[in-house]
Image 1 (tube, rainbow, N blue to C red):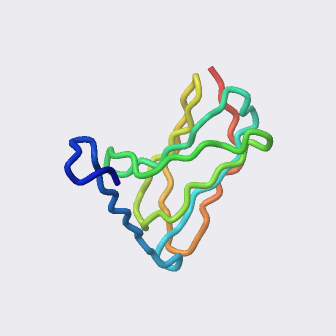
Image 2: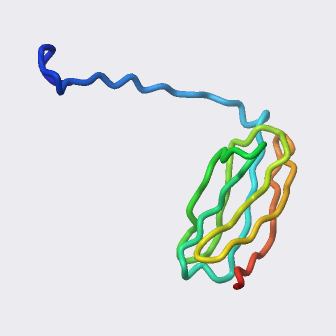
Length: 102
């Protein structure tokens, strides 16, 4: 925090949100060709809920702590692929292997 009279001062108010893992689920998968650094997005009701980059070496991803609703999962690099998944509380919804194509 800067000096109180400075116009450049600021205060940070961090917040922590705790969610029981029993009330959430996750979506995971594997991109077989991760060389173009893809990102996975979970989208519900037209809004992006969360996103995650892939493990660069393995191509694996996990979108975690998702409430139980219907999601569209979009995997994007320079190409685009999507799949609809309903997340169940306490479960991992594994999409399997995904190969991005033109």
